[in-house]
Length: 353
Image (cartoon, rainbow, N blue to C red; front, side, top):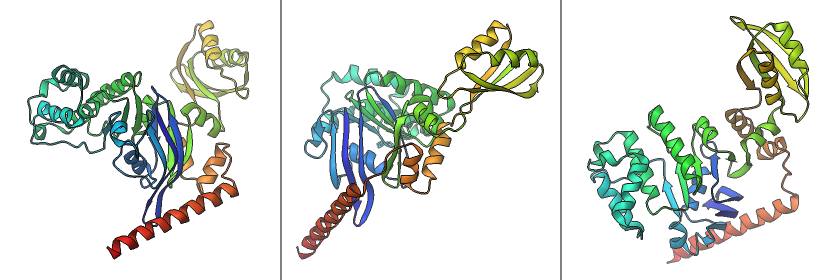
């Protein structure tokens, strides 16, 4: 659905995005992460046609965003961090305006009614947008992105300003939409990405340093794959029982943590998943399992570990990704020099005119 090939973006002599490559299939919900200034917003704006690219190619459902912008944009719904709302309009009036602007072919009334019900703003449809809370304005922004039922949704901080219940509702909505749409979700709330997305793309200093399933990233970066089980039990009997679980290498009693409950660190054989065996053994003993947690890295820990590496090559080495060869680096530098020359020539011609 989305294909990005050798994408670069230069502002004058500053290279904001450098040779970015990735593809996203229909139905994927992908978390797009990066520190401030990493190039994340630039890439999202290029994908949605708000910015032109310097080099490379971006296609949406087979349509080149540069060569066929109208057809490509018809397949995209975009919710920027600050929704583009006309606050002196009423909610339905604004959505009617967006419908006309997008030249949508669906029956107007029923289509807008369905979207308003979906994002739960139908009861405020006759209110002025400027009189709505920040949370409801965000919902109106979400609704405008859905007008025309686009194949691709690009969501930048979609839950900003929402209360906890509204955040859960929007997360559920994103998961539901992901069954029939391709979704790129950018957020600084990493728990939000972790709850909704399986695949994660991390960009730093204009380059992609990670693109994988979250579980795979955690597996590659974690040095400790042990589990900690908290069980209400006799500690000695449970220690012996857990050591007999298949693929368990060792069990360490961590001591009493609350009334009648003990923590056990369970160390599996390399590559083994012992969660089912551990919980099953505890159930066999008719003991109560209060919690079973993994010591593998969280998404926040993954993000910090990669973005705080010495450089992007070091981050890739952590994940076992081969570094760019000297020949490829030379080719990229040559392309960079050519693009600078083109920009300088263009600027000189504009100055002469």
